[in-house]
Image (cartoon, rainbow, N blue to C red; front, top):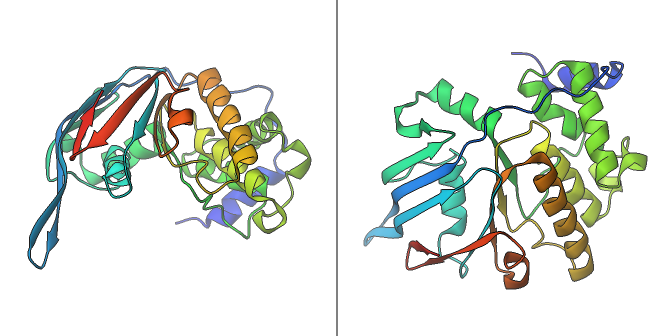
Length: 249
């Protein structure tokens, strides 16, 4: 297996390609059908999700709200193919996930799904530019093309002057803007966001959220965002509420 650092360094050193790659034609819906998830406990099973149903249309921005411990993160993990439901079916881009083998699931996740978390999860030894190049390199994007798109996205989020800075030299808001750029670098049809501004002060959160919405609309992505912030949720196209293990709305 190749060293990710070597792959990223090669992309960083490569001259920019002559133009952006065309966006993927795949525009999947996310379809959840009777999704249930239970966890084993010493005194019996704890059922967190109790039959979740939802359909998210192409290009639709959907907020999911609910109290802490309601299962929002668990549901996002299932939608992102990082966890399996105890029962129920999931479709991403028309693909019935339960019919896929491990390799096909990995390809679907890498090529179709993007993630943004409350904490940035940037690699500390990589620069901002390298962090945005990395997922593209893993997905097999040519080095020059990956570098060009990474630079464009960082310029778009106002960090064109910070390309060579490592996370330790960036503010909290800057780190989260890099995380937004990284999440959409591969043009995922589905973007999952778990409290993407929850670790920021109100002013910085507003700036990051505005950029997040603008970029996802420009890229034509479908978004499912978990948040406690009712005001931010109201600015999405639609709001789902996770109550009693079920989605309402």
